[in-house]
Image (cartoon, rainbow over all chains, first blue to last red; front, side, top):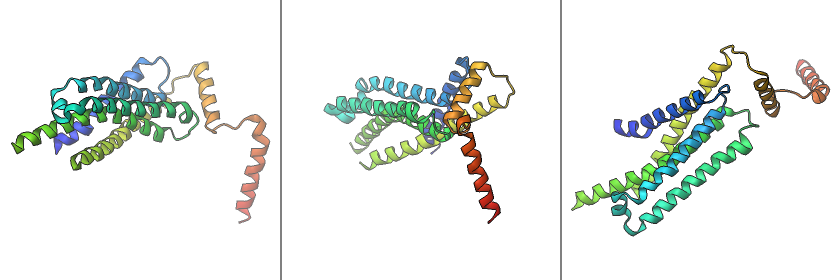
Length: 136
Length: 81
């Protein structure tokens, strides 16, 4: 159970905290709630970038076979959609709302989902491959 | 299918937890900087005022008489029961 918590919450939180510190330190201005949106966008861009490896992974090809390209494109599409939600929040909601904490949490969760979508495809593929090996 | 659903639910929960934790981390950073007593520049002060105006924390001078009348009325209503 500990590895599930570490893999799904501990490690992502470590990377997220690191990105937030990077963003805070790199900015010349005072830290504002915009840090959360920048970190969320960084997460989503990472998720989109990591999707490229889906097309090359052997486990993905074994799990999804002829459909692996469709799966990869679907993941990219979902990541773009999540990123667009973050940008919509930044454009239309964030500046005028007084609930900065709530919308920061929503944005960061959306950004993190973009990475999770990519990693869960891998997790599902490895799970399927393990199941196939065990049943043989 | 069951495994896929399990992964989806796990992902959503993990995103909620991590988003909440990181949101509070950002709040910690912003609040710490606000309470540090550092003197803000003119540009920062103007941007902050504009932001507070958008958020409704500052009342524009043109709206001030109406706002005072409204608050007097609500205070009178409260004291009269």
